[in-house]
Length: 85
Image (cartoon, rainbow, N blue to C red; front, side, top):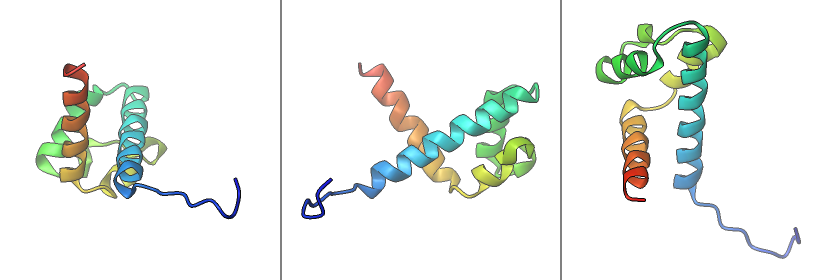
């Protein structure tokens, strides 16, 4: 990379990637602990109660740093991409 090259970053893409990565990490942590990750994530998203998310692998800490509305937006956006293929 040349220092004279301008690079553009889309903050929305970076945020989306962070949310996707966090959801994946939390999903994996819940599955490792023997929980049904879908049920636990839905419970958290619907209620806002972090008790639905295990603290295993810092999953609870990770997911509570993200606004639940942004999580829903990301999930719906990815769902719509998948069904429109």
